Length: 439
Ligand code: CMC
Image 1 (cartoon, rainbow, N blue to C red):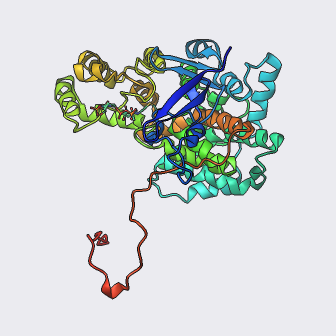
Image 2: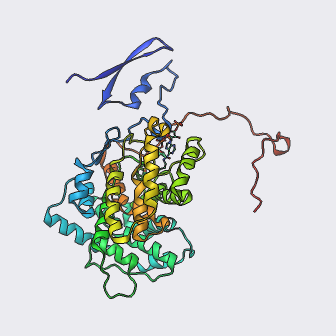
Image 3: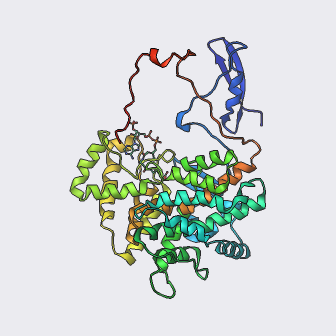
């Protein structure tokens, strides 16, 4: 196939350039050849919030936002959700292929061997205030693991890297469960490796005095499926952070902590908690039109709606909605579902949302299920962080193995003062003051 090119005429100089295309993109560095004169730095692209910039090549996750398609390593999310466990999907995302029976057993046992936390980590977590947000505890404690495993900084050693990846996948549920129990002042439950990944997580969360925790299989399957849906989502905000921090060769614990910090934001993973708070605020179906009106006037956001990439129904939201009914068979219906569904119905018919192509995203229904299972809303984002750790790690490894990647370091358009001289303090004109906080 002949090389595909783009012809650009610079109207400032009248010069014409032939720019090669790379897999349907323009390599930004090609534009640097476009200069007004020899002194000129060359043309750059300006793309705040990366609306139209591919920052990497990736073979992990494919999204077609217009058609509502999500695939991990070529497998549709619907098939993975129906036929695979979360640990199989984690293997797929990390290794590129679904595991054989033998590989699965080895993977599962390997993860099982690393679920324990060092006692010093447990003590570290005990030091948080009684009302600490579990996401803050998770983010800080994952970073603290960097001090427990200092060898993790050898990020170019593939065997060492894999050991840390397995550790992280194994320890995130343990950290998460302890951050949850901390809020209730409950003792820390050690992992039980007779149990599967999800069942053990439920054991660490909810075991009281019974000698052996037995998870409800329907709830365990629902949690497993929700983990599969959240495992990766290509270059979302937290994954971009994982790659950026990792590109400076920070160790994986610190990089995951940074990615989890990004996830905690209400526009990202924190949205599931916000959805619940929104549904509580709305309270009854009668209040929905008033709320929608406030959204349209720009005074509020409809949390759990809209997505940078999906301009169609988020395929994950469809699966979550179906799963909700299976969970409610066990837990009884969460009355917020009715408000959520009515909100969705009205929003999907309303011109404001239709014109902007705003559809429910994965967070719209996941919180309703998590709450029915017994989680407090402040745990919802933690529940997102456990499976997303798999995606972060796979993307981090891919970044390290990509010979084209370097330290992430964007350019800027400088808009500040021209060069000037420092004036003695006594002679300076007063500038608009920034008020100091009174306390
Ligand atoms: N409610 C009301 N209006 C919205 C919403 C919303 N949830 N989302 C977008 N819009 C409007 C926005 O005001 C803008 O309108 P206009 O063109 O008149 O200025 C238009 O739709 C385009 O939105 P945008 O802000 O340019 O879109 P974005 O791609 O920058 O933002 C988003 C994507 C997910 C941050 C945004 O849709 C949002 O804030 N949604 C609510 C939070 C949420 O549910 N986040 C979870 C995302 S999915 C899971 C995850 O990533 O963790």
